[in-house]
Amino acid sequence: MTVKSIDKDLDTLTLTLTAEFAAPVEKVWELWADPRRLERWWGPPTYPATVETHDLTPGGDVAYFMTGPEGDKHRGWWRITSVDAPTSLEFTDGFAHPDGTPNDELPTMAVSVRLVEQPGGTRMELRSLFDTREQMEQLIGMGMDEGLGAAVGQIDALLAA
Image (tube, rainbow, N blue to C red; front, side):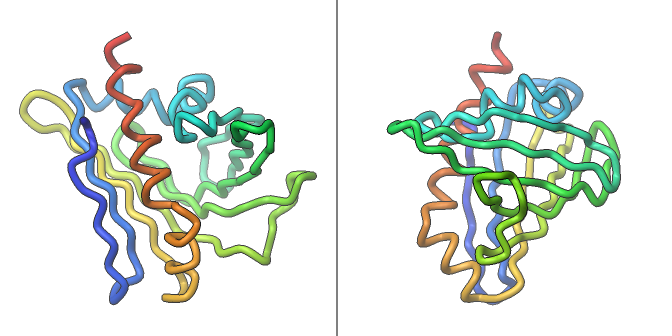
């Protein structure tokens, strides 16, 4: 499995997933940069993602929804804050209402992605920073850590294709 660790640090309000892939940085970056490839792994296997808009430039937006086993749709959005292709991406990640507008009743988080070349491939660090301990605990209670691990766990198969 590609996921090496998922660390929850309530003191620093961070959830950090670390994964390693037997592929070059540029190939791993394409899984973020290409919306059709992103939607093949961003949702956990039982909640596949559909990317509706995808603008990975500072100030750009990504809008998507995940479809659950019962056909239920869960919308989300990103607001891109920084891009340094092919090694880093930063964005604000949030939930959305059925019409796609941001849902301010659920927490947002600042996400940073770092791709680092290492012998034999790429190390990816995906760090989510929360505003409060309560928000972090709320999203972990909703299964964020397990869902993220399951989603990233699909990447090896995509890189092998």
